[in-house]
Image 1: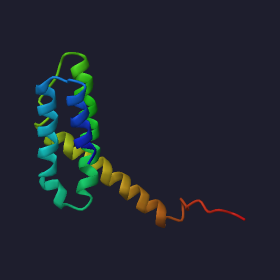
Image 2 (image 1 turned 90 degrees about the vertical axis):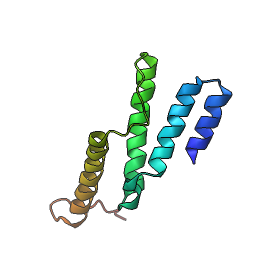
Image 3 (image 1 turned 120 degrees about the vertical axis):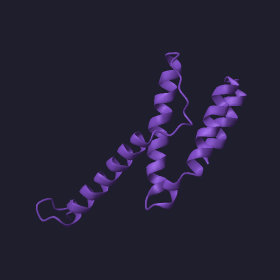
Image 4 (image 1 turned 180 degrees about the vertical axis):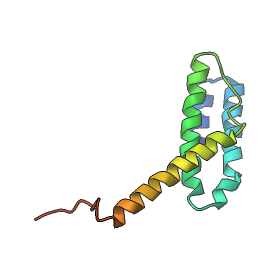
Length: 106
């Protein structure tokens, strides 16, 4: 939902049209990406877009832009792996007697 506001404000503040179009295309590709059909796929894609968008903005600042709409499968896989590893770690800490959950005391 935030993408629509972002693109609106990019137009309002007169960003270059090629940058606006590139970002709009990026979000369109993500909306239709097969990852969305997988468990936690939307959460993984949100993490992916945040990382790639940040990298893209940094590259633009250095005049080294790239085609943000071209999804790098290695980057997506790495972010998905990181997400799943974090979820596994959280699950282990939930059931492990070595790492009990913090409890509130009265």
